[in-house]
Amino acid sequence: MDGRELIALAKEARKNAYIPYSGFSVGAALLAKSGRVYTGCNIESATFSPTICAERTAFAKAISEGEREFEAIAIVGGSDRDDEICYPCGVCRQVMSEFCSGDFKLYFADGEEVKEYSFDEMMPYRFYL
Image 1 (cartoon, one colour):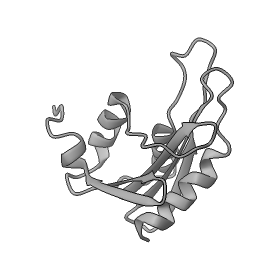
Image 2 (cartoon, helix red, strand yellow; image 1 turned 180 degrees about the vertical axis):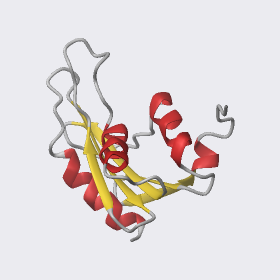
Image 3 (cartoon, helix red, strand yellow; image 1 turned 180 degrees about the horizontal axis):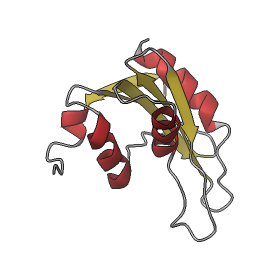
Image 4 (cartoon, one colour; image 1 turned 30 degrees about the vertical axis):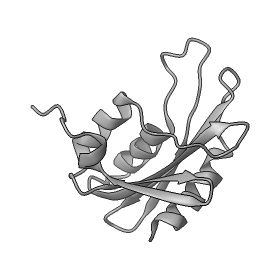
């Protein structure tokens, strides 16, 4: 599966975002090495702290189904459902660092253009135990 296909699935997942406070919707499509794709959207809470990002929603779904190895993720987001580059927050990057190698791919939509980065480019100095 290529980046454009993952972006399309992330855009579809984004439609389910629960965003009554920020109006900023995010969708993610996570490709496991098994070939399965897990989607997620952001889900807000009035107290913001329990809010969960789309990326972590997708990872939680995949991990709860037994997946532990991943190839790529596409992330799309923006206000008013317009695509903007939406990089993962620090918490999402740390969750990814638990399960993703340095060559794990991240895809972002910038209009019709697809941008691709490796995880090492997004998180060059990861926290390891």
